[in-house]
Length: 339
Image: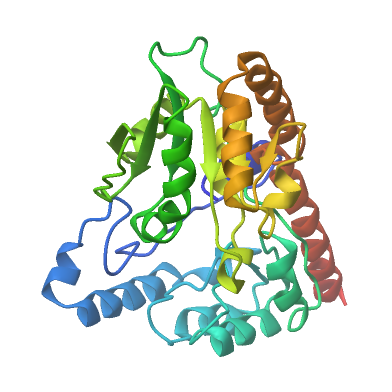
């Protein structure tokens, strides 16, 4: 949600953005173990909890706190959120994954029951939020459309079908593409690109595979290499909580996507207009081949995809939605204070 800071400031809000240290306990976003975790994961979690409390030492000076997920997710401690609630500063609780499944359910429910508002990333997550929170507004995953812009021209080379994701998802999702991509490679001159923080070391017979290590500063540039983006998912409860960021990233760059019709994916990709939904092996092969063999269709879908993101999944649209929530909360707080 960092991309929203500037957009909210442009709407007249004074925004102070803070993060705990370390931002992750086990591994950083590049997939490397943090130095604290190498010493002791428990120590790292303790440092992060202490960092969160220090970060909130002056919470009373703010009119509102917007938190993306529970502040220290690795432990059951609720002290950071309790400090916010004790301060009587309204909390807006945002979450964009099914973090309520499993051991954190009671903690997330406790936070939601005390939050002034919740902004889950899709309707599946909103269903859980509404059981505990009175005010819930879906704010989907978004990208900064000033940064995510289509390439001026295509990088020369064979057709490139791509997938981007973290190490944990590449182990679960990429196997779903193995046979469709192998079948497609028999009839299409293509390269399969994987962008991830960990090399899955795939050896798919008959398929040219290129691994690109994910680097935040180069993410957009690397994604622009892709001609057709993919987002395969198993239809399970956790996956239904996904917010479709991969598809939105492809689409913002004018790249048509083929995705599993799981959860919010079916609302992001409009089948046959800005991409394709693939529910079976046969669907994956047919839709990927259709796009691979029709450059004009790829271009048309790419334009429609970009327009979809600008209309529904841009940081500007999300900032407008959040601003409306914030204004309602602050107006109510002002009325209570006056009373």
